Amino acid sequence: MAPLQKAHVKLLYDISSPYSYFAFATLLRYKEAWNLDVDLFPIFLGGVMVYTENTPPSLRPMEVPYIILDKGRISDQYSVDIRSPPGHPMDTTSLNLIRFLRAVREEEGQEILAECTRLIFEEFYAVQTDYRTEQFWECLVPTLTKENLARIRQLSQTTRHKEGIKEDVKNAVENYGMFGAPWMVATRASDGKVDVFFGADKFDAMGWWLGPEYVWRGPYPDGQNPYPIATPRHSGIVARL
Image (cartoon, rainbow, N blue to C red; front, side, top):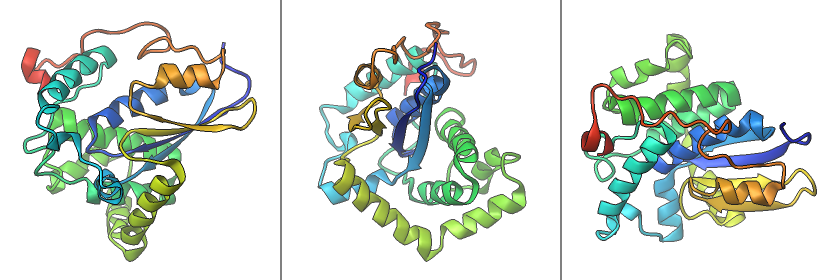
């Protein structure tokens, strides 16, 4: 039975972060089971790294082999198809994607933002369409009409969103202490207290903090896990790179 009172969870995420994808998928799976008010908030992780003078994991040579293995394990565990696109992360940037999702958030609201985010994650990691091509954006039709897609893409390149991205980074770091992604800001229903959780592996801790009704049952709230992921075009180590 879901908790009677709604807890609020704000997810700050970036398309370039595979762990953001894991957190995004899991949070939406638990939205009903935990009676959550979910606020999706796209943010440019590259800007966070610069603002905090933090070093991205991809620039820590000793961590890279482990991250590759870890992504593969979690990909199977969570049934989320993660395979790094060619050149990712060194030769890719999510800046325009985050500007676009920021504009979607303002123009269309959370429901459409969730679907656009899901489709972009899938196109980026599973399908691996080059995000710099027009073909990439076709994944968002018919969630958005072609006309509305073009309108929002154009809007996302205005000063409002270019400068807004910078303000979002500043606010996330200064108000929430953000230094990486995914970053979750939870508000407890029982007393309104706020706490933050970093990483896709913090749902157990967040559930414990929210209260005894918020039981963590693994990647799927019904306790089932369709292991492994269904990727007929790829298998084994290929699906993990």
